[in-house]
Image (cartoon, rainbow, N blue to C red):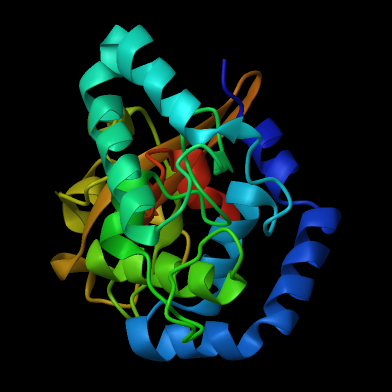
Length: 250
């Protein structure tokens, strides 16, 4: 069974935090430019790259073409998805003029510092360092711009909050745990069920829609989040409440 406490401990710890600060300091200009252009604050870009590859330290050791071909033809549950990604990868390799057998990535075929699948590479990768190539394996600046572009293109709202912690009273909250991350429940409706934010919201409570997220740890009380639109956008990068909550660090 998955544990929020264990997941958080892996990605939110002094070693990771120090590595993130080092990455931020080294690439502060690119991060600030990405915030200006795409409206995504630096901390979210840094957190995503940290979780994905530990700031480029672990980008994968499998040949991408092998990983995608194996999943495309030997994994029936998601064969259609991985066949599309294999085709996208071959298009990427052709257009970039690279040897399709030379690129290594994750066991699922994700590529580079931000771990983009080939389809995302084709759609959202940007040349952020100005050298004429969107290189997500060799350029941290390109990775930074591409992560910000991905989030923006998926509906990131500049200046808006991502989530709020929540307190629950009674068992009325359970009917709102529908497993989805798209914010569709009026906050006032949740309040009637004993669910309240742990801090004042930026927008008038009556106008706010949220998703209720439970972060579970076996044998310990759950933590709850009120997820807003930007939380949902982060889950388009990785469809996990743990993933979207890890940058919070609490």
